[in-house]
Length: 519
Image 1: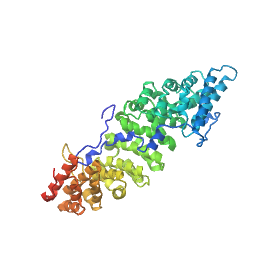
Image 2: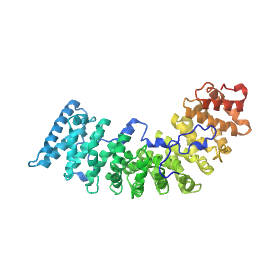
Image 3: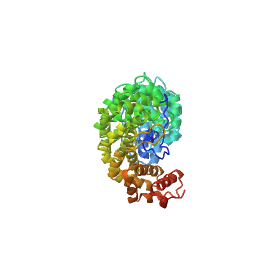
Image 4: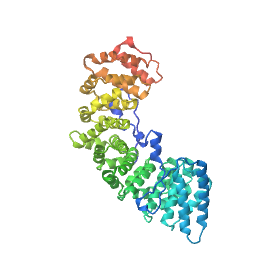
């Protein structure tokens, strides 16, 4: 294992060995927050409608969203608020501080109340230089908080609106320092989280300006709200694709212990945000994965998987577990070994998720199981003897297509022993006969018929195992009875040469020239 970075690996075009291709597959997909645009947007950027801390009780909170207010009216109000803000910053008379805070609060209210905040109007009115001035050192905390809150919601906007914060970033980062009050530091962290959520370019700017250290330092205490905000911002900041930030984060003194502590003892909201940090650490950095693998993280993840019913928490826990199993051989070689309680508990936690009504949990748990099933023969036996197999067989027949693909990898992996050297993997005939006898062949033939190249290849690979491994020529009879030959004939003119050759070779070898396909 390299010291610094991971190299994500997709499934290779390997014809025979089903078992060897699952190790480290799809790690790059764990870097994604979610395929659904809504989920991704909700996690990447967050509009701040309420205060960041209960300690900030003296700051009134306007949480009415006024959904029906005309946008033009809101924009007019915003223009007036920006003009008042500019006037307030130059005012030096009696009550100057109250006037500034009042003007900031009015702008913050306008930027918080609508489903579509008038950020563009505020920027066109020239609000940004004024807000930067309000962040100057020596300003009262109330003023800093309101200014940072305005910047947070501007950063939650469109890409060009987020980039408008570039002049303010050095001051925002500076106000997360140890001398800043906790509410101000936390609000600044929220603003940086929104900036980091914009993409790689803005993440690189923040990293070059030193945002990682102060955010990491905010993870260390036991203050739930602060840690939640910092963890969410960090997950946006380190999500890659460059793994350096993830490696740098885990090397900061106290961060590893903080991650374990919050994940173990934190409430579900806090644990969820910390679990996402774990997802990105294990997806991007081999160094971080190795450190986490040698800690108590696996046991903590399993315990929380077993005790929680929160979909928001279970998803990152499963992804983190899958990354650990796929990314560090220490886990499978030294922790998940036959006869150990932790191994049984992992399988039981995954079975719980397979039984869930939530599609994403079924898919993620099948992915984790496929990585475990790609391990030793002992790992395969543990899964094969568990309740997981009956659940997987049912999902292969009735599940959505993407879940059936994940399940097929598990079942295929259960039937082959790890290869020695560069040779083909040996069959585990007992498992193969059991699964085929349970009716899984139909599901694999359906994959062969699919338009998805990866699924079709997987189906053909399993057909080869059946034809090669079922005793007394039973494999040929079963494949022919389930119209498997017809399914393979569809590749006669297929554009994918690899699949065309695979199907042709199988038909020629096991069914004779009468069924031969044209190359």
